[in-house]
Image 1 (cartoon, rainbow, N blue to C red):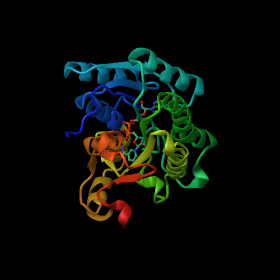
Image 2: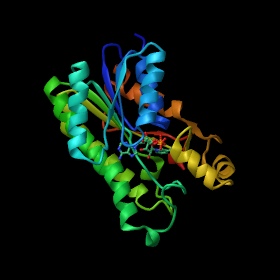
Image 3: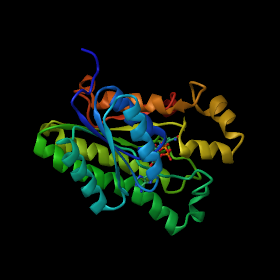
Image 4: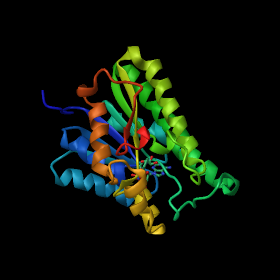
Length: 261
Ligand code: NAD
């Protein structure tokens, strides 16, 4: 049996760029109809949809700030209205210090505003998505959800402020949702990427710290190379597929071995 997601409907948050865009393309490649969503980068979200359509797939765009429960509820409703059901969800929208949009610095420098921005997107956003996706999937009697955490949620990196705590909490939330829904045909897992290129997050980070890439390759990542968005996206579609039918509550590291150190 080849891995496919034929006749499935997949929702991707943070689908305007980086890992989310790559996952949306992989979902479509495997036959799923894809609801691409993002908060402010509407142009990027629409571009992802165009890329899927150009490759012969079926996708639509819905704008949604994951930090708003009303918008998340409307997003899930829009997906079901458009395609009739919701089989797979990738709760991936996230922000963190990248030295451009949010500075790096010790906890003593973290402002209340940046703490709230990160927590509202990375943690509350995943909670809202999980809640409304689970309500829908419970009605249908099944589904598969993948959240995005980070190596930063498994090992604390000084200077990352609220980011590490927000991603640790996403792993905890994943385990809770997996346990509560294990007998209802709904699997919930989380991917923990290491430094991943082809994303605004990492590319801004590397641009603002010119020595960072060599340091990561030589000293930090056991495999000696940075991850790509496709590396992460393929793990996500695998977790959503029947190939992972007995996998739930799992935190899957896609980090070139960093978590093992
Ligand atoms: P990215 O900046 O390219 O993508 C982030 C996406 O989230 C964008 O589409 C953006 O529009 C969207 N987004 C941000 N705030 C939002 C909001 N409030 N509502 C809806 N959408 C919102 O970076 P990326 O690396 O692809 O990020 C995807 C996920 O991967 C994030 O959760 C990030 O924390 C995680 N991650 C990234 C790396 C890395 O090295 N790039 C490593 C570990 C984890």
